[in-house]
Length: 170
Length: 134
Image (cartoon, rainbow over all chains, first blue to last red; front, side, top):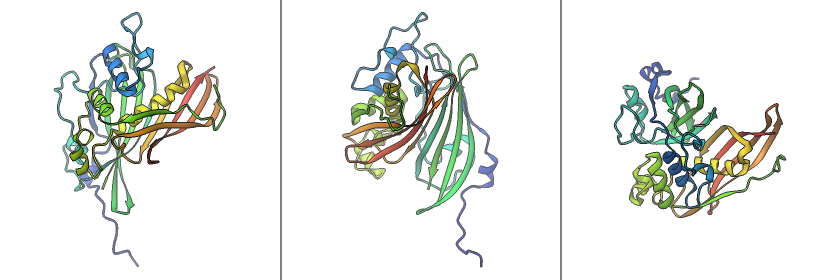
């Protein structure tokens, strides 16, 4: 006997066809010593960060950024600063397709592989793609998982990090 | 450095609230109302404003960096968030060594980590693989 209460799927053909598409790409401004110091001050607050993040920097002794440093916060070349889209439909809005009718969004986790460290003066290029949609059944019904893969390289083409991020919508 | 399986990392502890979160918002461009305003936090189902998941990521990186020193290099890092960091709580990032493998480059150390608050709420679980050069 078939199950009359077959689970509802939120993955439309349009969404399925979008798997693998680029969500965003771009390059950062050169990382400054001040960017690195400010990041370290924020994440170590209220203690003084380790000295390696607080030096004078410069060409002779460029600072190394903390591994999780984000060079894409605020403005990037060619793009104006804008308010972040934190809605549950942010992903499909970036793709220009119809979002699923789900309003709650949760962060499902992040997996990072690190390559060479980010240094003062580096320009980082990012390509972010939709990696997959999949679903699981939970207490509140169908949960839609969306995975995004983001790769960063520096100006020499060296891999800085690869990140897989998953958001859950329900 | 004690690299035996089960050895614990020196914890990284922070009192958390708007002072931390506003500073992080200022470097991450994460000016989301529920991280800054109690009423917005309540609309998200929390008792008030709550902290950023990305700041938990930084606290766990601080934990690793404080332990591994200059000979260490983080190869991989994973995190899963469980609960939000509530305002005016003390967050402790802690961890232990899960396994150690000898390689040509040095010792490859797997870490199991987590953050929890002073009300025994686990906020995030994480893993990392760190290369400690010989």
